[in-house]
Structure formats: structure tokens, C-alpha cells
Length: 258
Image 1 (tube, rainbow, N blue to C red):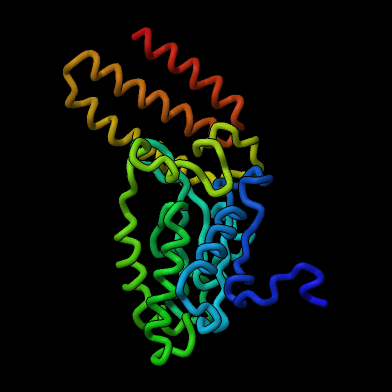
Image 2: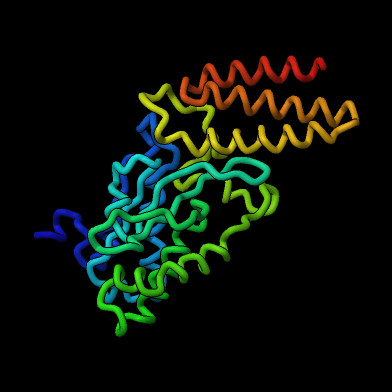
């Protein structure tokens, strides 16, 4: 009867129990496509050589932003969508684990690109299963040694290819468009957008320092453009995509005339 309802009861519990919120598919606060990420994690675990049934009562919860709609701060491990940047923006996830105790909320211990999320989950589970005889639960493993292991795994995925070398890193799971926040609608609050604002704040700070040392006029114009662009985006990121795109076009026109 269960199979007649098209429920994948033959799959490992861990794989069937990967939970996500709706993410940026429909949520105006969403940053990443959490449903697509959850699907990618499930598919990757099914294709891996890991024995997921041996992981025990372990839950993987994925939220599309820092709001805990998928309850990533209660799961272990948990993930929340964020914006990351090298030369351009790309989708990423903050990694959460209960490093203090079973009664504590999970804490952020680093971040990983959305594209590397499935392989990161596989490596983390493999590390735990290697020590399954020493630690009854995943939580015990994390509190004893897992935090260090997470940092080691994340370090391997800290750098991602350039857009020319690995375009998939700049597309979110389930999207055929390059990752962008310009199409986000007007939001009720900015809780899910702090990462984007912080990125532009960091760009402004580094641009100010570069401006003090710049002497070439073309270089100065380029720096001023970056500052105007970032400041505009910081101010309007929570006001919706249409306003943001319009202002960036105006900014581009003004700075090109300098």
C-alpha cells in the first residue's frame, strides 16, 4: 500500500528525511533554491557508496535564507542559504552544527558553495561513519571531534573556479539562470538579506582604501563606480528587483560620464 502511494519507502531514512523550506522558489525572503539543494543532496547520497542507514537518527535541514523556516538551527547538520562572492556572486550555504550540547541550538561553523553542498554532506557523513563505534550519535561526534573535521573539509572547498572555468558554481540547483538577487521581490524584512548587504559593505571599505592610494584617473573612476554600485545596492536590496535594476542603470550612466 505504501509503494502504491508512490512513497519511496525502500530508500534509507536519512535520504528521505532531508527537509527544506520553499526557499527562493516562492519566498520573497529566500536567497537560495533550498528545494533544489535538498533534491541534489538526496540524489548524491543515493549514488554514493555510503551506507546511510548506519547514520542513525540524523536529520539534514536546509533553509533558503537565515530565517529558520526549515529549522536548520535545530538539526544536525543544518544549512541556510546565503550569498557569497569572488569576482561575482554565487549561491552558498552556512553550515550549522550543535557543537555545545544536545540541548543547544546549532551554531554556524563555516560555509560552502551550493554546488559543493552534496559532496560536503557526503564527506561529513563518511567522517562520522568512520568513527561510528566510538560515538553513538552524530551529535556526540561533532562535540568531540567533528567541529575540527568540519573545518578541515570546508577548507578544501573554500576556493571555487572562476565563471569561465566552472559555470555551474554560479547557477543555483534547479535554476537555468546565473545566480542573481536583482529579481527578488519586495520583502517584509531584511533578515534574509544581511549577507548581501555585508558583501557590499566590505566592498565599500576596501574601495575607500584603494581610492586613497589611486592616482590614475581611469582607476579612480573605476573605484568610484564600484562604490556607487555597492552603495546603491545596499540601500535598495530590500526594496525589490525593479527599483534596484533601475538605479544600477542610472549609476552606470552617471559613472561612465565621469
